[in-house]
Image (cartoon, rainbow, N blue to C red; front, side, top):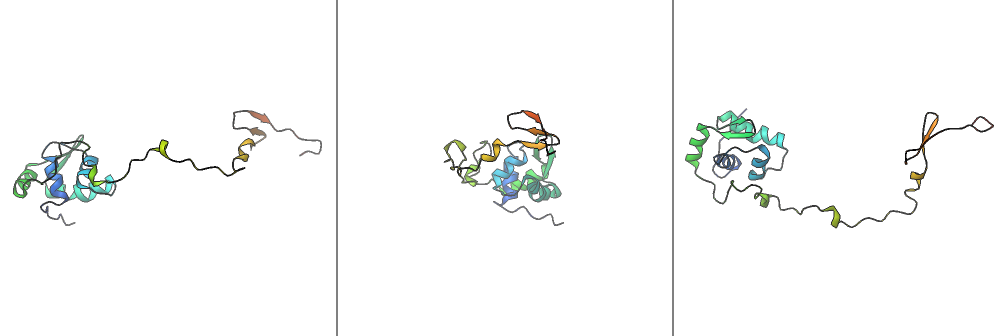
Length: 144
């Protein structure tokens, strides 16, 4: 596997810069970088490359920068416009509306669509109603 280079202002550089302020977990780093893939894939692609280079190490509670990572970051310099000390302020990467179900318009139900709910389910020799009642099935005079 190619360990790749840490290029100025790229995702790996942003990760190293963010870790220079203290340990962070994968979710925080993923937001800082703006990665849209899953956390597991983010760890495999971004963090795996940095671990192979010896720039970061995984510790309890997240990721930390190593001495080699600090040396490389010193060569690259700071990332302009990135303030990793502000928690939760990296949402500019995700310019999406916040879902609030209370504001959603309720879709009308087709008349008769829920009529089946009044009928019980037959399990074995019993009828199970949705309100919790269980009644044994009785046979008529024909044996049905």
